[in-house]
Image (cartoon, rainbow, N blue to C red; front, side):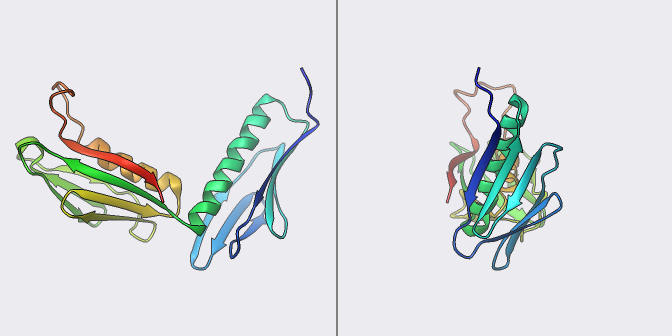
Length: 183
């Protein structure tokens, strides 16, 4: 097997996006949007140049190669999130009992799912400035933000809150489902 002397993943910064590395913390900003993340490892380092960020590892083993690629993907998501943002679309589906969706503070309530008397609650752990959740047309839910992990986890919390137990999923298909991810 061929040994590699070093790994370097170069990520080009789009126009208007700046990045600063202080110690092990990388901060990516564009305008008022900014994301910080800590990248700590003894052999892998994140370097900042004028228009690009490099994830570098000297004499990597298999684990360091994989981790360098993972870090490059995280940094790429940070750059895309600050530049464009992430948006997930969810759809509420019901057959007989019309459900009502409401966002109040840091939770989303789903009432009348399968005619249940007790409303279901989805926790929204981040502030509306970090992750914005909107209900449109009574059945469409839009989740927006600049951090991919926070947006994805919020959409998953909403989808998971309507999980149906002790029934056949092929017959009882009511719930809230992710229909699209991306921009």
